[in-house]
Length: 142
Image 1 (tube, rainbow, N blue to C red):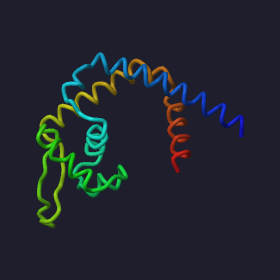
Image 2: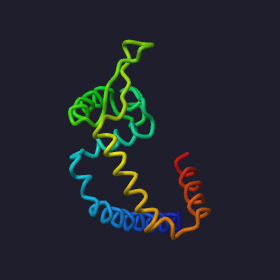
Image 3: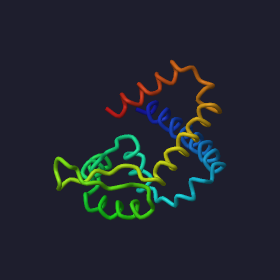
């Protein structure tokens, strides 16, 4: 047990160092701040980006939060033009959420930052090793 705890502590420290590196790179792309998103809004936007179109229920289930918590955030994102809401023509009680114009800009900026991180950091590691890291993380999450 002690050895596991020792390794886990080292993993946490390394993740912290990595987060600092990423934060420095993102700071250079200060345009992210212009979106003025809260951490919860950021998590919702990332989910929407990866899964659109989505519903409020989808977001609540994924983030493990109440539908009312989602319902409080969605109008704020819509007001910022980050998302659009559209009635599902097949089920008029259901609303689809997709990226709005500012959401598209946000996606482009995130893609730019990802490319920068790949060029500067991830490309220094063999692709096979990155796949191994992914497999290990997936095993832990399961």
